[in-house]
Length: 317
Length: 289
Image 1 (spheres, chains in turn cyan, red):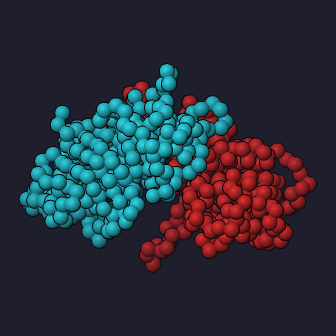
Image 2 (spheres, rainbow over the protein chains, first blue to last red):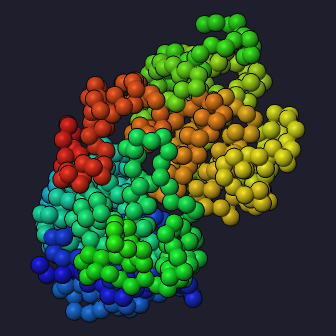
Image 3 (cartoon, rainbow over the protein chains, first blue to last red):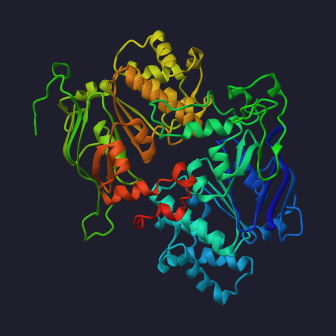
């Protein structure tokens, strides 16, 4: 399986504050990888760095390579990035209203995506737009609608159709269903998974919802404080977590527990730049010792591993 | 409709909130000179009963009318027809002045803790406001007591809402709601804007306070799993009607109404996912609209 996206040593900084440090990430063709973490963990910044969409004053370092693009994506100029965006990498954002142009009809927006990248001639773009809508189960007369005439779920399906218009090799979804109702979420998730499977595209799926990531993805990376603290196949990470943060997160989201009280992680997620040195989780961790003032090394390999001095699930420690 | 309005302390009925055939229509702006204005039927005959000390959940998707229902129960909106009886008093047609007992006995916690806290007020003033408004002495002692009850330090009182994280702000909202010693707490999506690790803390806090203070809890959420954890009974709303009511465990395990079945099957859970459920399984029972 060839790697579509390869991220090496990605860091994101604003002035002197590190927001994301040392993130390694690969997504293979047809692979569905989840990025989970709470707010402020740096998961969205990681996605935005891949797309070169970081806000002003925020800088990315390290390396991001995409299969089929012969230059480094970090630091590439806008002219070259705009050729990559929407053609090789597409993104679905959380808020579908702001991702669509309110003054253009849906059909024109879909056609524009293909015309800009010259992937379809003008004569064929219209028909292709209709077909894209059909794939996301929207009626053909949606082509003539404006975004405000559609519901949130319909808009998000249009955004997905837009993202898939040029058969991107990588689709990034950043909390695509957080604003949607559960029954609509089910449909949109299914359309996302089918969309990437039909095209054998790679999927990078960002969410804070463990159940969603477990349903959609095969592999998962857990982020906290701008670092990847654990990664591995979904089943392994969610049934045998190694990092104490993953363990706490799983316990806190277990609403099926028979006890009236939920297990909690003490404290709050610190604001960006206020995470402790060494292990980023040590201020909230019950197992932290003096050793945790040093950054824990990565145990395991690229595809599966964790960074914790006192991992869970060790009997001989 | 009973015009007789009993005072609250004279009865100790086991029913805290009774809603009878509640209807709320919102007229929309006219679109034509020659046709009547279109009407949105937000509530179409909702009836429910919440016992004192019960934890009652209302679940439904956006637009189903659950917020309208809450607003009418809290007398923040008027019903088109039907009645709401809170602790034996029909509040549906009461004037604002006579709703004072309701403002003391029934308090709300809203979803977004940023927009429901005045950014220009200090936390201690926010918490004391319901007391001041109702003419009670708002002692610093009571404020400190409330801050402590929701797990905030006493010096938090001197700070402003923006200096707190989402979970802490929700704690401030809860402290404010508890200030007039209400008997009924209504929580409208109180954890929807929170991170998972903080959500567990706030849910535990609400649960503890309901136990300690013998509150009646009405908990509204779009998330049936959260309702299932917090509540004893649940009403499922769809399109302005209650389609199913029952004990949460039963409704979750064996939903009767087709809408509830669709809702339950659409909820992604870790257990199902780890045993191999895919996204198409979420759609298993019928197509969502």
